[in-house]
Image (cartoon, rainbow, N blue to C red; front, side, top):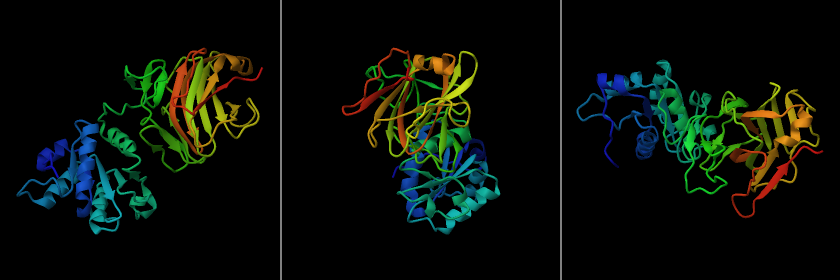
Length: 341
């Protein structure tokens, strides 16, 4: 294992420390690798790994106390080996007593149901499946932006060697890409959005997530396509502003058989989705001009979107009304949705 890179103590720690990482001794190697990964994704982030970053000859207890007090956020790492270790309760309890935000982190596939209270009162983050969530949480808590994980509304240049379908996961506004792995907020339920390398996933209808947090995309488009893999039902909402000033949502769902403002809330225009193949990727395209008569107004802008249900989402494209939307891989289907004339 490489020697620790941050050996802060005393006044230096009070000035520089962002994150305090608590762990059991048997998880030291894995936690140090995690700390190195976080530093690489959030340049400038300072991390004190408890027990690993104490300078030779320093008072270890004083060092822990000072770094715990100076930290902006405390990460407590749990594994199958260490979930019941008293030291985690000791340092975690001290963090709560100091009023520090505490983030439980799960190693080696440990289930969130396995961690004890009071840690179970906070949303736990799996390092195996939700590393992007941890990076986003630390970025928000410390104010350190990541050049790799763009925040919501930040434009990322599209790589020049990508094909016309812009195959990298993301939200595409013409030829610009917004990163898909950060910028989400939960507005319903108590679960957490699964963020993988190539998609995000909502587990059930009870969980609702929106992007970006305040409907600020203001994307001008004549058509929107989204690439979805239904695991169960699909619930995809487009928050739009009409040219007459009204704010509405196009609510695309596999559960509907009827079009229009036929339910509640009254601002949701229901769009039935049929023919999608479950557990395979489908590209669904909404052509806006066909909706103008039913909405009594053209759509001026796409401002955000929401997802619910058992579904995975990898792409959202905002394009002109006549743009083509081709499948990214062989075997995928593309479905054009037009309001029935």
